[in-house]
Amino acid sequence: MDHLQRSRLNLLTSHMLDRGALLRLDPAMIAEQAADQRARFIGIHGMRIAVDSRDPARPAWLTADEAKDRFGDCEPRVYLGQEDQTPYFALLLDHHLPEPGEGFSGLRSLAGQVSNSEATLLSYAQAMAAWHHRYRFCGRCGGATHLDHGGHIRQCSEVQCGATHYPRTDPAIIVLVQREDHALFGRKPEWPPNRYSTIAGFVEPGESAEQAVVREVEEETGIDVTAVRYHSSQPWPFPGSLMLGYHAQAGSERISLNDQELEDAIWLSREALASRIEQGLFVPPPSISISYRLIEDWFDDEAPFTLHTVCQKNVIEFF
Image (cartoon, rainbow, N blue to C red; front, side, top):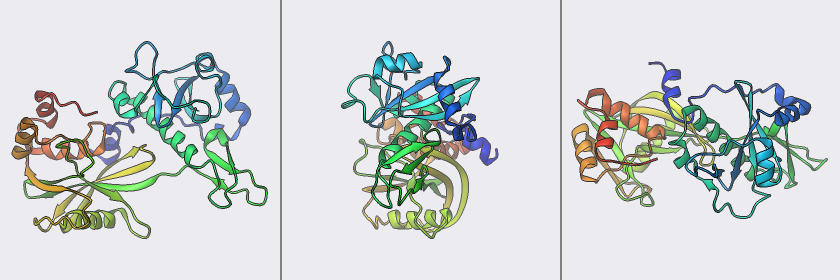
C-alpha cells in the first residue's frame, strides 16, 4: 500500500473534493454558488458544528433559506468546494451568536456518525473557521482584516499595510516507536483515565520532520531513535495542524521522562496491549485519529486478531 492509499484511509482525509481554487478568484461566481438551491452551509461557532434539529447526533447540512431562518444570515462564509454539483460553504458564526449552547456539537463526536466524505468536509470547515477567528487582525500592523477569495485569504484593511494572510497549518509529527516486538506508548496527565497514545510534537523551525521525530521521542521518553519510516498524514483541525505519521525503530529501551510532558511511558507487546485493553488499563486514542491508525497497523501486522476486534469485544467507545 502506498502513502496516498494510506492517507486516504485516515479519517478526515479520505475525500477528494473539488476545492475550486480558480473559482475563488471570481466574487460573482462565489455569490452564484451561494445562491444555488443545491448549496449547503455548515454552521461553525466556537469550534463546534451546527447539528440537525431532528437528530442532534448528526450535522446540519443547511440550505441558504434554512441557514437564514436559523442564524439570520449566510455571511461571512468560506467556499469549501463542490461535489456532484453541490456547492459547500462554511458559515462563520462567531460574531453573530452568543455562546453556542444547544444545537451544536464537537467534530470528534460527529465524525463517527457520518460518512468519510462528510467527515472530511466538517474537518475542512472547522479548520477554516478556526483560522478566520485567529486572524481577524493583521499580524504585521494590528489592523482589522477582511476575508476575500471565497474566504481563502484575509486582507489587511489598513492602506499603508495591506498585508495578505493565507490559511495556516502547523506541521506536527506523530510516531509509533518499535523495538523488536514491543511498541512505545505515552500518557499525558490531562488525558482521560488510562488513555495512552503514540508520541507526538510540533516540528520546530529549521528541522526536518524526521529530525523532529528523533528529537521529540528523546525529549519525552529518553529513547534513541535509529530509523524512521513515513506512514501517512492527516489534517487535525483542533485547531489547525497537519499530523505527519511515522513508524520508527528504537536503539534503546530505557525510558526517561525528561521534559515531564508525559506522566507515564511504557513498552508493550501486542499480547500485553490486548490484555491491558481487556482489563480496562489501556484506552486507545480516538479512532478518528492517525495515532489509532499507527497503532492498528502495527498491531494487526502480526497479531492473530485485529485491534478493532479487541476494542469491540471490550465495548470501547472512543470517538
